[in-house]
Length: 394
Image (cartoon, rainbow, N blue to C red):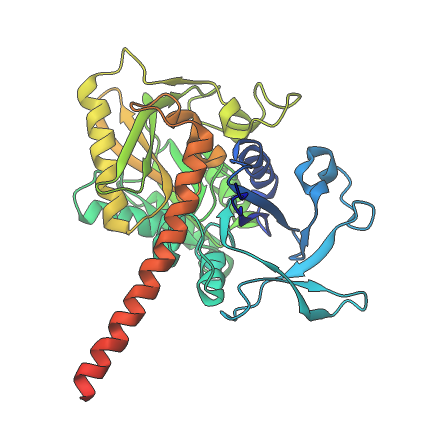
């Protein structure tokens, strides 16, 4: 009996994002759950300065408290946009890339959150390198991460959204007072309002404002993290409802969840610190929530799932995502809020409660094999195009 050769999976995480630490948590969770008999997992950590490292010490949470590549015996690596390499190149002792040393990769498991990892940038690099990767492709990732563009497209296809407006940092720097007055004169933008970074998740930089002074302060805060702010009316009585969607024919929706916030809207602390600050690696899985709430009307649950599946297809999503909705309890109206192309903890906790149930290990295996299959399909497409060219020129 011969031993089955394990596929080499690059677990990519970190990056230059305000959600850097959250990405580490998601990656460590994934490593704990992955099928180690099926896959050889190679951790690839990208620092906030953009340097790439690999090494077994990256599987330990303590390694990130005072990160020192030399002490941790890590190797610096990089990924070039050259398809023939099919893996990572290693830096030599002279701090130069050694073209004769590489780590072969069969597929990449993406655990990024935020800019340059979740927004299509990393997906573009992996496309150029011709490496399979989990999750949505470039366009879908970019659209999902831009709250304004995502809302515009989904609302065009009949998925309900709250009204919104966008403020750009460049405009605010030129004439901040004019920006404020434009918002105040917008009949759809009456206080209270919610202010968010357009291209960040994990509730970073969001705030509820009650007056003009708070609006000014909130916009200034957003522009620390992002070049655009999205502004929406704040519902006075709201229930947040989330659902995950998994690639399939047709796509599958998980059970829904209703996260429990400490103050009307989920904050960064709600998502990542409450119940998890001093505990083991938990991430979004540590958030207080009710999964498949029994007191939520079945028609609302079904609407959330149907809208999410519809949005998944409209945007061209692949792999696994999470759609977040809001239910206006005063009007009993449902609104799309935002889409997470690589959700915290990869939303495994929703699939463990779904019917049929998917445990995290199986979910990760599905995502990896989906990525590998997509590459095979793309190679087949290229061959078909070559055959078509031969017919045309014959």
